[in-house]
Length: 461
Image (cartoon, rainbow, N blue to C red; front, top):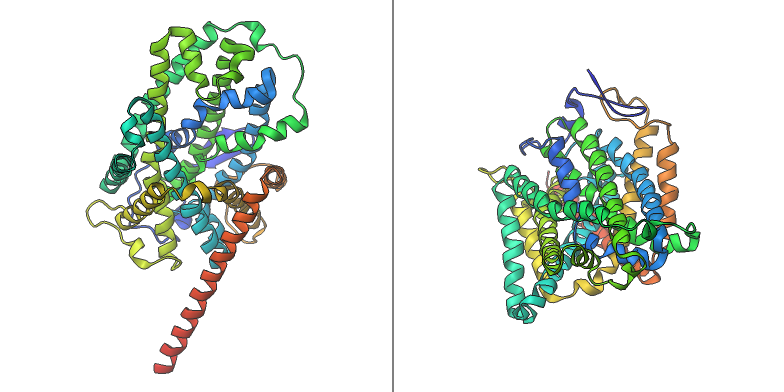
């Protein structure tokens, strides 16, 4: 039986046993379906940024903002199509890391693994808990005090870790509930916003210039980013060759649509004044529509949105550490699976502890410059891996998701990524070069020590 997914794309329902069995993480329970990945994608992208983004984009593009959303959304979908294809071929845990490692070997794997769980996961966690504390401290100034701030971090990170240790089902249940809760006020805002919109506020007098599009492109691109981390739990998906591509594509299409609707609603209500509310544009929209209570609802929704992403991070990134440990790139204790809950408990605790230390130290503020570059490099690696798998001979792809047009879409995705890379600041480029240089030295030391140990063992034999 073949299931139509989109024009020119088909997918066999048969479980891809051959691909899945090649993964080492088969001790995990395969319990997540398409709905779970779909919700996880939306949860990971609809975060605190959406509550600020409308004013930022409107400040540059005015009424032409929607053009930038559609343009960047389409470019991002090119990359996600590559994720959809390769995720149906490499069906173990690890997401971007697993795809790059399978295509290019242990060195590329080690770099991408650390870039992913540390360069992205840890710094994003640190930024989110600090953002949560910042918003909460407006109403409760006690959270400006370092001690109470640290206790809040422990509560947020600790609860998220605990829930995800209990089992992937429990972790996904929390994510689904939180996602639905945070989407309700946004849905209400869109409905009321369109009802209260003025057509004059939506009229577009001119198209944005290429320079203006470039100015907001990186901000928008990273607003859509994050959904691909839902694929990190590939080793826990039911029928992963079907679940992964359908979940990521449906989730990203829904996310882009939600972003566009919110921008149009905010613009329709506030018009040219939207760019004046850079600190809380959606709260200003809600205040305009239903009064002060609307402002409060949106602030609470932004806290729930942050918590929703925080609850998903110990689900996604410890699986990257687990995969790295199983490939002997990280300490073996990280590969241990909890005997009762069948979750990578050691990796979850380790990831959460490192994230807490970085968050409470404040060091992430200086090192966070590598996050954007890390994500772009990971995207480039995944697109190149997709191309390599396409060119690989004698590869059975009958039962996997395949995008049409040969290499047209992967090459177009590379061109799009190059466009976003040139938008990076010099400090971001320097930061990522230094970071990769340090990781390369660590890898060289690791390989040298392993070879020396192998020689000693061989000599003893």
